[in-house]
Length: 489
Ligand code: NAP
Ligand code: MG
Image 1 (tube, rainbow, N blue to C red):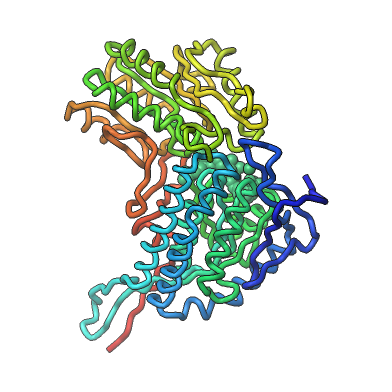
Image 2 (cartoon, rainbow, N blue to C red):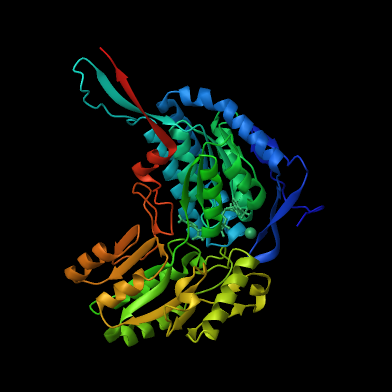
């Protein structure tokens, strides 16, 4: 929608160290999903000419930035970390207003953003190569990791601080310049992060923000000859398109995409632990985490007891505005996200699954102006059903019974995705079988499926990623190229 008149604050693109409207003057409104009448801000709806300007600035800045000493680049990242930390409450509250997750979760995520900046600030002082014995005894052979040049960063709305930081911070630390296109849904949060980089004193053109639609600015990044690497997190169909465009022009790319993450509850599991972790994994952030639990596969002996405890606890969850301290579960991030979730719930019923609890949009009282869906549990779900196979990205659990652990692992692997997976058991044989046989990039024992540590590699198997990894020491693999040097003595 193009907004002509409003009192909401205006935000701009950040290009070459300056705040700029879209050249066309077009804007869109960013709305609060807990109250659609609350306009969080007005943001540019940029076009290709805005992207071109950002790419030109990023290329112009690239050489000097790559030649700056790594520790000096790290110092700027430390500064950005301190500024972000000083604004933690404001940025977290903006995130909650823009996409609905609870204020507590938003603060935790913003703190993660600070920690990511500090981790990669430190990387500026760590090794960027190896010495390798040369066959010629008088020679010296070694590798140097060099930046790609300009990196395009395309991010989703579900972690509007952490995901951009785990891409932008390493890109910068290793000497790349950045053109960032955030999800339009969380563009105000993005503009506030760009302010952090601006105030930290990064040279003009090193970090650029272009706010606009995926089909114009996002696709533009994928196709732009001035962009040398693309890091994307989002849905599978979009990821596929980006990789095809990148491949066609020989650009490096990295994709992190969807999941349909299973929890296995073995017959010897600590049931309270398994129930609490299932609820947290499935319903925190309203189920809108790529690592959210969506299938729960339970050994049949303990199925009735698990089901009873799960339903009892699910019915107690408080739904409301994420800024209200008593809220446990916020709204879906947007109206279209809510519609998608409701359509999957309807499909589940039509395909013959049994709806045990939830399933409705909530519209009582103050919830009427938001996009609230009850936490929902289905049983009698079979592998042919859409709610077993497709990523819903909402607060919906599919319960499945398994005869034994072997069948449970087979069902868990019956998915095109392989991002994260958990098992609840105290049996070491079960643990070892799960670690060996589960096809997922993140396998967790007696812990929920969601949860990522910034110092460890993160990424999925099968259709969940481009088989690359992000975060920790894995980041250097994507954001640099290896130059092998031989010097004849
Ligand atoms: P999405 O629709 O794929 O959007 C992600 C980003 O891509 C947004 O910035 C979007 O821009 C942009 N985009 C849309 N169309 C594009 C195109 N044709 N070319 C280039 N860019 C384009 O995904 P989403 O709905 O925002 O996010 C939810 C998805 O992200 C889920 O599938 C979830 O599993 C996945 N996710 C994965 C991870 C992970 O690490 N594996 C983490 C979080 C989320 P606009 O929205 O502004 O149009
Ligand atoms: Mg919004």
